[in-house]
Image 1 (cartoon, rainbow, N blue to C red):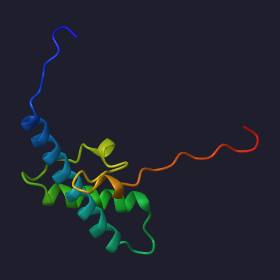
Image 2 (image 1 turned 60 degrees about the vertical axis):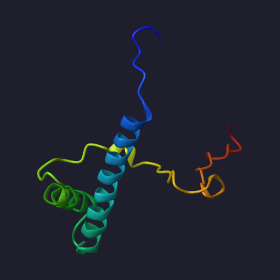
Image 3 (image 1 turned 60 degrees about the horizontal axis):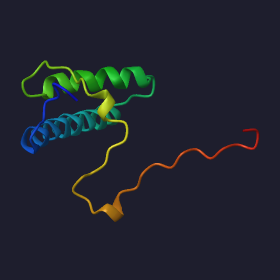
Length: 96
């Protein structure tokens, strides 16, 4: 790979730390929004409340959450390898 940049472990670890902090804050805001969920609201209302909470709680404030792609499946790198559970693929149906 010509022109490829080699990154040292420190910048990578720093970026992972930022992603972890942002995703943890997003999860906390989502938990707060779900606890405030009223009977006549829907998932879009909860999502809007989560975004509003994140904007106010984030440091510096008013920065939107941009890491939706990082929240799908999370793996805690601090856990032992044996404790990590990976999702299993859906089994093939009889018609497949």
